[in-house]
Length: 338
Ligand code: BMA
Image (cartoon, rainbow, N blue to C red; front, side, top):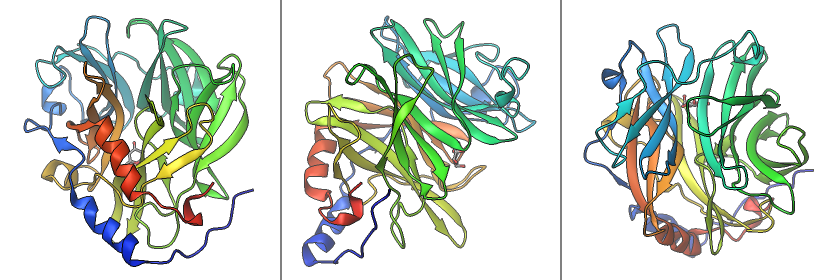
């Protein structure tokens, strides 16, 4: 059962902590947007919401969601030595919907999150498969981003915004995802012995309510980052307004051995649509990261995000800075307890 939420006291301290959030935690790259439809080797409508990973040779791979001119999405890989420019884009779609064998993909595949799994020596891609029943979570494994072993739907509709943790927790694989139920659009974790059969489902982070920036609907962004203090999780919150939704980013920290336990959750959003390419596009006011890479210093994050459902952008941050921001901007009231 979900806990009841309670009105929070707006103390002076809390108000001060809200105001301090103007310190930028992520810096936009001056060459943003780094990828868009004009870069594509074949005609497309938009390129956004890419999963990201580092390849063994140090190259950055972005597995981009590409929407064609029918409105349906497939995935296409782009590779670059520095993760910023000089992209080499597959001349054809890299992974296309396969509705004959996987009918859940009939309206496209979207928003991949990539996790390298050392135990399997493969990359796991959790993506949205879109069909008449709504969006669900599908899983595929790959060694090379050329051939893919599909596991089909692992979380039925309505569900999306999923990523696998890179290693087993207490002997089981763990998936964070965002089902929509009558209880709301909250983040859950589920466990599996074999990546096929899933159970032990738990809510790990709830959308807040009322006027909050992350009221009613939240979802995982990029795959959780393992740190000495716990799993660092970027999530998006969706604010409904009279002129549409605003997608912004928040931060939370989960226990390393019990990723169902939230240790800290920031009150304020820490990144939101400000640049023109984030504010204007097919869907205005959206920043939507599905992947990041971590630099050789073990601290620098290259956060890759879709902007306005139209193009790809990159912003740089620091794991240390995000963790210390959480120390000073986290809630202590019941509103965030799960
Ligand atoms: C979400 C997802 C994303 C998209 C966002 C804004 O529900 O479908 O793919 O970027 O909406 O349109």
